[in-house]
Amino acid sequence: MTAAWLLNALQLFLATSGALLMFLHLCKPPVVAVDAPASDVRRAYETDRRRVMLGVGLLAAAFLLQYAGIFI
Image (cartoon, helix red, strand yellow):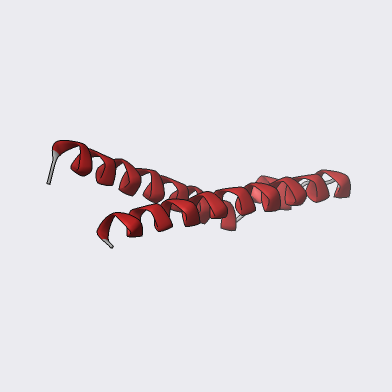
């Protein structure tokens, strides 16, 4: 194993872990957004949250594929 290979594997692992943690954080909305008095505020928050969850989920999936590719 070369040092570059090891550093690349470590970087992919850390990036994947970070993306998965962000995704898990977005799965449960904060209480402030759920209890907002205006329905348009809640609707806008839910729309943005879904888009960010989709983006972070796709990012995590891409990192997992790259990480699996290192070991195959």
